[in-house]
Image 1 (cartoon, rainbow, N blue to C red):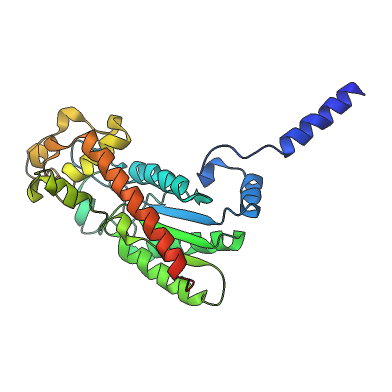
Image 2 (image 1 turned 60 degrees about the vertical axis):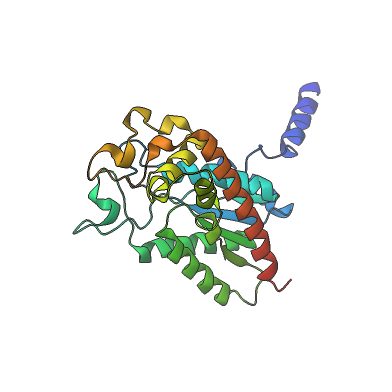
Length: 264
């Protein structure tokens, strides 16, 4: 009898146990997600990254590591928000002939029309389960048009329902980080457009192990390096400021979009 009673108490305790302290959907069980939805956790972020060359000094998964980290911070700042798995395959150029980052080994591309379909069906899946605010944020430029188009199409289709899709462009551009770097005296050329101060600083702040410090050089150190900028001037301190600005801006814009999308 004692064993049976103890067993019943253990089962009751497990049944009533809180979900683990994570905002990442892939780290939860389906019953934990079910219970979170019932408790009002109905916002979810769909982060898109990319697998592309980032010069000799940064790993191919830069966008994926960065956006997973940032999406987690954004979700916690928002409250009642989860994060879907990062989409690591995004538009990176053509295969034959290779264009864009596809000229570099390790890059993986997905044609834009297929990228849009993956986004669409991720959103459809999440809506089916009860999420009412689905947020697209993208860590790479080519992701933005597809995210915007899918959000607009689904919002038009779902206009009479309660679910809304939010494409937050300011996560990628419009968060003020590059302007802030310029105010610190950094030149536009050094800040760069790919793998320069901006990119390298952000990754240093997320995880310095993902940066090969012995390979850092102005414009990558050789022609065709894949670097446009001067990562020698990057720092984790710069990166932490950038992350703060990106998270704060994105949280503010998500909240604004959630209000205006329903006419509030």
